[in-house]
Image (tube, rainbow, N blue to C red):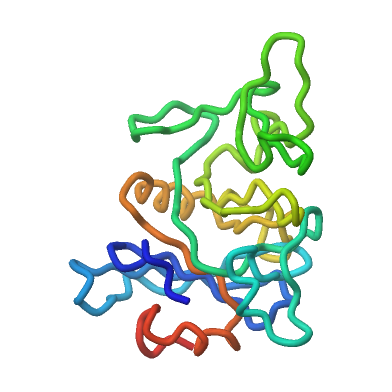
Length: 218
């Protein structure tokens, strides 16, 4: 279950939770100079949080779920477990990073309506139009962040609008995103546009991805 895009990745953000039911997690950055080179840890592991109800297997990883393990659905307030590309950066302030999205209240809506053809995308509504979704520009936690390129499925209501963003604190889970202290988010934003990936996994599932992830992690 190693995604093909992982082979060319040079940066990996690893998020691990002790179980699929906890919001508390740890995050660590790994880098390598080429696909045949071993991953090297950068810095130390630091605290993070995931969904307030824990993790659930993302749509493209539903085959990894064992008995009793949840699969991601819209509104479950769980973060999708799996391995995904890191997408564009976003925030309240402009940036020179390519593709950076400046959020504006009422103009940056992440559509969470599975009936919409724009499900799981960020749009600016046309004049007079309304979109059902999250007004990202009005949310202070999105003052800095990164899009997690989560490939959802509207027919299965498989979840939407998954980001890495600023946290409320180490005891406060999210609606389904990964959240960190603001300085850490700011540092990780530099991975935008560099083909970086993020792995979000419960510790008990790390051995299911043997050969995909850095050796010796637990």
